[in-house]
Amino acid sequence: MATKIGMMDSAYFVGRSEILAWINSTLQLNLSKVEEACSGAVHCQLMDSVHPGAVPMHKVNFDAKSEYEMIQNYKVLQDVFNKLKITKHIEVSKLVKGRPLDNLEFMQWMKKYCDSVNGSQLHNYHALERREACKGGKEATKRAAATQQSAKSSSVGPRPSSSNGTRKHEAPSSGNQHSSKAPSSKQSKPVTAAYDEKITELKLYIDSLEKERDFYFSKLRDVEILCQNPDTDNLPLVGSIKRILYAADGEDVGGGGAEATETQTLRPIAESSSEERRSSGLESQKRKLIVNHDVDAAAVTTLSPRQRLSDSTDVKCSGSSPLLTC
Image (cartoon, rainbow, N blue to C red; front, side, top):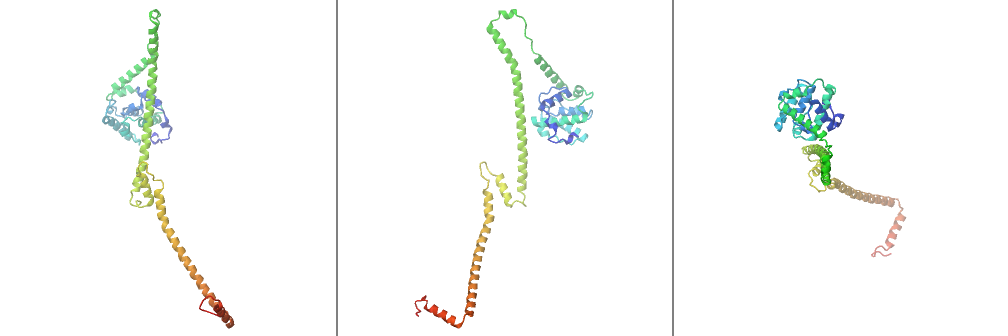
């Protein structure tokens, strides 16, 4: 079912023009922007078109202007979702503000759901009659008819007069002025439409940036809550993360903290290694002295009495001491 649509589904790649054409043809309206349906009344009637009788249309307000009145329409829509066991979450706080991106995404979901229920075909649905039971429904129908009539008249436009007699008596300068004014008035309408299109694109871009900002802010908030846990508050890694989170603009927190903690952890190892080297050097010297004494004692015991006497005379005559004379 459409209630389990993912964000990468093809339904969320349907354009605004297709969505508006679908709404206007289904409900016989003349909406020019998707955010004009932010009151929730259009959503209620779309659900009524695929589930006749499931929506209490007398509770729907097509003339809702304030957020309180719009919320009442969304309450009706939520009751219909609960009755039909639809698990779609309605972000009312974002929709009532008329943000283009949020309204477009929810309307894309609505189109996918309605197409999955009726197979993109409506059978004998009288949108005007059903809307007359709503509050402000007749006025909405009149406004739609008026805008359609004005659009038709502007598309046809006034026909130029074909009388040549009057044009002969006009001055050539005045003829040039009229001819220059006519194209400018015709060209102003497509320019205005292009500006409106550009403004709508910029609003959608701003909404997408705000949504991305809120996403990353929520991630940072989760990291902050995790770092404030008493079990992990004393860890060096948590301290480094906090320094990054709470650093001011322009403050360098790239590797200072990591190097400090690294030197703190490596310093005792260096001291212990130098002490071990000293102790090992002393032990080696002691071993050498012990070995030399043992060798000398063994040599003395192996010498003959004559060799011992000759060694002693050599020592006496060596002249190493000024007190000894041969």
